[in-house]
Image 1 (cartoon, rainbow, N blue to C red):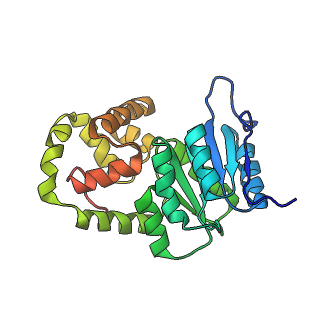
Image 2 (cartoon, rainbow, N blue to C red; image 1 turned 60 degrees about the vertical axis):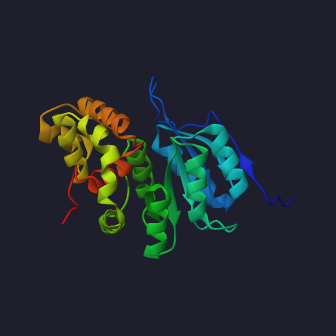
Length: 243
């Protein structure tokens, strides 16, 4: 029997490596091919500390799944056959504000990659890359980081920086003024591409303190993840574009 719309949920399906007391990353897998979804599921579950909360095979089922389950991470195959999946990124972000999207693609079209990031993807993995790269991308994005290659990051951020309106910064002055000196240092480090552990070493603080600072920064500036913070920092002069 052929089904045109497929949606599976296994709420308790988590990796064997998830430790007692730790909350696993709640992941939804969106893609048009059952074998590809099964491969991604097996790969992520084998990595540990991941709970796959559902799968969807088309746009309508994908949006419904994300609205209902509110996953922390979505792994989205941009090569789904039933429409423009770059546009789907924005729909998924609207369906769940705290969901971060890792896009998978076999396309080498840099414009497609830039569009995906502009719509809200914070991770992008090419299907030619080794399987462990997807695992790393999901882990990093769940930790609040972005998983994009340097050239793509620089291209998107430079484009956004050029398009920003300097005269429009004044409404943000109060938010920026609320930042402490240490929070500004953390923002500079994030803008320079440093990970939490590297920031901790540079500023002589703990990883936990870095996470606390980032939580405070996100709340003060109204951003929800690391890539948004980087874009905000470049737009408002809190960090400089990498050379």
